[in-house]
Length: 89
Image 1 (spheres, rainbow, N blue to C red):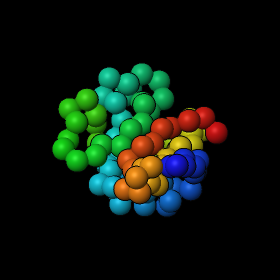
Image 2: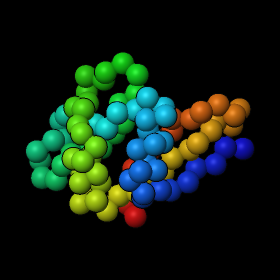
Image 3: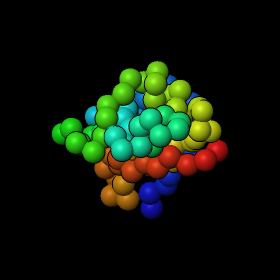
Image 4: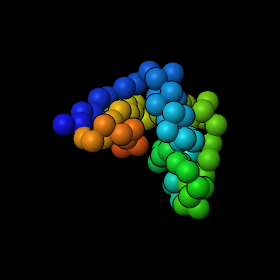
């Protein structure tokens, strides 16, 4: 059975995303509407719905909103998982 864990450490979050090819991003339609926008990771080919941002801006929004990352290291079959979800701390 696969397990998910919650993390708040910036270095650990960055490592998790980068080892899966993830880049820090936010949903374009949410930027500039009070707060920094809805955070996401952009994996693989660029997603037109997302705006890539730098790690510093990503973590500034992350902290301003009191978020944590719920992430999964492996799938049930043992492969590297890209499941993640931003949740309130």
